[in-house]
Image 1 (tube, rainbow, N blue to C red):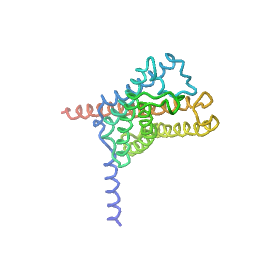
Image 2: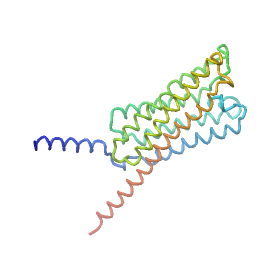
Image 3: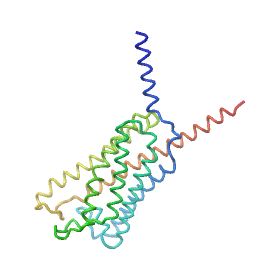
Image 4: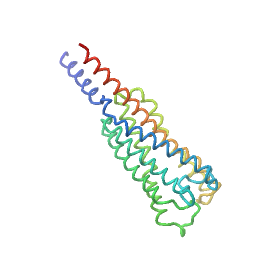
Length: 253
């Protein structure tokens, strides 16, 4: 019986060691850059609502802000969000210890590539007919098919992995909520299209109020990235302070 108990205790100790990652392994610069890049995305999109009022936010996609004057701001916004994904990957990869989490990290890079592609290739207006569709618009749509569903999956997998890391104990609830919010807003956007498009002959228009769900979606995506980056910076500070305390104790006679 003692032998069984001893083996059980060793298994628990091994599991705890496997998920508890040193705080100093978090690159502070990458975490801060991820936070700043996601915030920049939100600021640029908010500014475009004022600068380009011709795109009614109730039924136009945010990607359409890349069309016409000041379109470069939306391109920059997409690239900023892509940068946030890449730097988030760099910041937290040492904190991920599960297979699911590593799959999530790979998806996060795929999402970053999709966002960069969506920024480079401008979307066609949602009012365009099939004959008016362009190659760059089709490439934008292809990138969206990767990025839009990819980030919620990555967010859930990564958040579940971080939740097993004892160093991220205080962040578990926030990361789970923000991760779940990504797929909830995605379902809301799909549900809006499923309900409203059939009543408008399958075409987008003022009667298909897809704009607000689309904005909630990108807000949720940015929110999760910012939450991960924020906690990563906080853990880095805690790790640095712990290192200072340990050095002070070691220096005492």
